[in-house]
Amino acid sequence: MKQKIGTVLDENTARRLKERSVQERRPMSEIITDALSNYMHGGRNAVLRLAAVERLCSRPFRLSNRQLVALNHEDYFDQ
Image 1: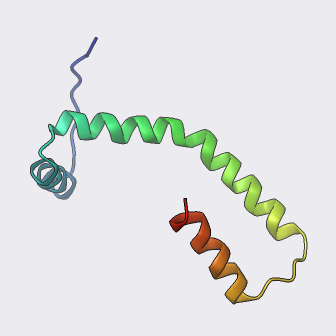
Image 2 (image 1 turned 90 degrees about the horizontal axis):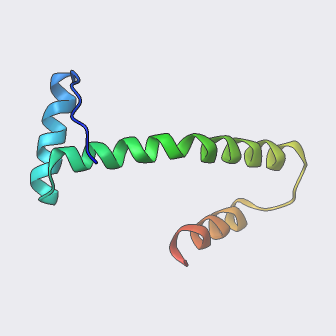
């Protein structure tokens, strides 16, 4: 069940939301719902990512910049 809420957005954010709505041919409410859902679920992921970065940075490793770029590329483009 959906619930109507009211909020105030700054002019720039409201304009960008309307533009995105037109571009994607989606209702603004759907875009806002997706954004809030991602935000609400992202909290746990953000904590896990921070912990992973801390573990990675707390130990010395011997990878060149080229190797790091290659690994990063694999993570994002070779899925």
